[in-house]
Image (cartoon, rainbow, N blue to C red; front, side):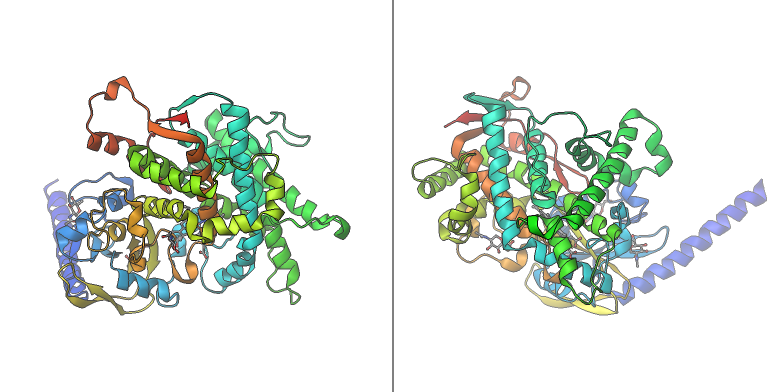
Length: 535
Ligand code: HEM
Ligand SMILES: *[C@@H]1O[C@H](CO)[C@@H](O)[C@H](O)[C@H]1NC(C)=O
Ligand SMILES: *[C@@H]1O[C@H](CO)[C@@H](O)[C@H](O)[C@H]1NC(C)=O
Ligand SMILES: *[C@@H]1O[C@H](CO)[C@@H](O)[C@H](O)[C@H]1NC(C)=O
């Protein structure tokens, strides 16, 4: 027993000594850049623990926003771990350093192993790098251009009108316990139409078509709602409960529907092609258009990409809209500004209705572009940008360094320095750190869309990432969000629902409660209870 104990103690001591020298060497190579050491850091193990001092930073560490940077007096610091290996993860919230990172894909590629879980249906644009990524990006980009943007616009109008006319009806007051329960299906219907060319409605029939056990809507809903189970659990565990079996079935069904859709489109006769601008068609066209054939996608790749568009595009937009609604309800003066602006653009106060939505597509194409490009509706756009500044759906953008290099940085006190970054280091572009830096965004915790008036610090704003690997769906998301804001806020005045258990709370307390978040794949609102009052 004694010998065993002393053996263990010796091993332990050796380990500590070895780590000590390793850490010293590493600190030297990074010139004693501020580090935040925890036992597990951001390793796989560390990300399972909550925040425990000296043990793990917690899954939501980025939500401390600029706090850690200001405490350490640096716009770059290192999250470091001691086990399983001594590792460094550079947390970057400096605009110039970020510009360097997003500006060079060769020096700072994406660590694709982190994206492995996104390979459910096949290789895709998000979970790839180098030549493979280039090929996917080249094929996908044309699908996301003007004709698809128009489709997004029109389908958003249809979906929200359908909600107003067939669900909310003529009620003067609608109480919603959590606005996500409205915006999640709304954004899902929009992406279904704009991506798959399949219109869904709020009051659909419930019978699955022959050959299926679930409707397309049901499968899409379950997959987009419960995909986390599939990400986290091993395959065998997916059979354990009814709910999990249902999720599994939904994935199978969605796959079956996608295969059917792809075959339908491939087999359509050339005579009956009405131009269709959904993303699926866009991808198929891009494949056909290339005569050399080397940019064709296999069916798995087609499905992988189509699926990842759904995942990348749905929850991000739904959550962003939720935060925008909450902020506008918390700041009625800003809501009033938005309303006044909408009134000047739609002077008769009449919104496009279900009936003329179709004619809008062609006759009023100018309206579609103007509404966004014209200066007339920029307040909605500013509102959206301010929401994305305060609640960037993607709170950390992972990269790594392919070579020994340096990153330029300005310290909070204004000194310009270069931070050494050893080859192989992981890098996280820390969006909340950037978005809450008071130097660029004075009074960063206040919702103030007007800060986007005139000159604003473009390099300190990164909700869609940047450079060649920036979000492909930015326009898609912006259009959808702006149309949704116009439609809801021109018709309704929106307030936070009063609840007896929260009577007497201060504005700050209310704000904190309504805007609280949980870290999932994207920044997720906890509960936003709202009341919609007819204007
Ligand atoms: C408010 C909504 C959205 C936000 C905040 C957002 C944000 C982002 C961010 C930060 C990235 C970079 C991720 C990384 O490098 O790890 C990204 C990539 C991407 N996003 Fe979005 N996104 C949104 C909506 C959409 C929509 C609606 C779609 C498609 C329908 C979409 C499709 C994509 C794709 C395909 C990529 C990968 C691009 C590439 O790697 O080349 N996103 N998005
Ligand atoms: C470092 O991380 C720990 C979490 O383990 C946290 O409590 C502490 O505030 C962090 N320190 C700084 C200066 O970021
Ligand atoms: C970077 O992150 C990956 C994935 O989490 C990890 O396997 C690797 O060890 C990290 N590299 C360094 C140098 O910390
Ligand atoms: C909003 O942000 C985008 C960058 O994501 C920018 O291109 C656009 O000009 C901004 N719009 C307004 C009105 O500030």
